[in-house]
Length: 329
Image (cartoon, rainbow, N blue to C red; front, side, top):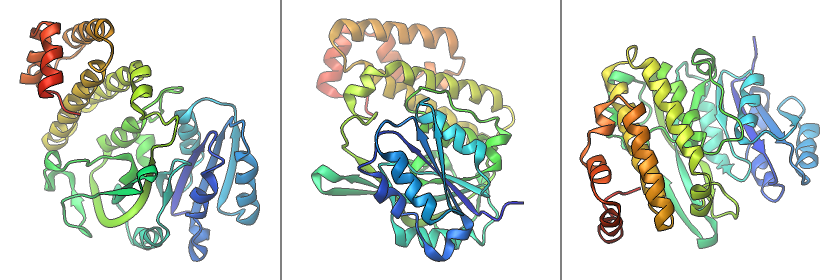
């Protein structure tokens, strides 16, 4: 049986500029023996491998370097999960970092737990603007919740990747494997193990620091539009898993997934509408066709917003969106 309490997987591709700060944030000297840090070099052509190897040489029982052919961010996560031995599993992107003081407290908290999911706050770091945004939860901390004990449908930003550490065994229970060479799989990472999650706890710790504004990030609007088919795939896979589990989960969890699917669907519509007129018109038609054919949940296809999109002539819909912002992110 492994003596590792927490596995942190760090997928790496072309981030040599940010990687030292990321890895330095994981060094808590008194707890290195119970930490496992899997640095997955995803065929990165820069100097990231050499940087990672320096940490592995200094802390060989904690930092493990996996050098693999490029398969995309999600393939690196899959590899991390394949090799993870820690009781809990958490992701850290290589251009992000942990607040070290919060991380130390987080590890101390983990040692006394036996629970499915551990949640914290995270901070969005708008580095170029010298601005920060704390994203917390409006629930009591230090309380062990069962899923049917709190109405999770009323908690904004509940299942955000940056705040979650899951019990590692949950990933096996849901046969977890992310689609490779696909963006936005953090949605699947955050949500799929939740189908098997029965308990969670929340700590008001500003642990994860999420760096926004780096050139080339997949969440840049131009990149989101360019990779729109990836969002289609993510929605489809999440809906497929929802249909697989919906009869085995309680109503609270079922309603949460329906709400999230509905929100994500309208996020997709919103992105499509930001395209040039003729492309947006065609994509909206195709999206409506997909919903009619594939989606059997009225809460997704029978809403007021959806009726506005599907019934309004596109030229008028474009005007309404531009002037009244009916569909919000």
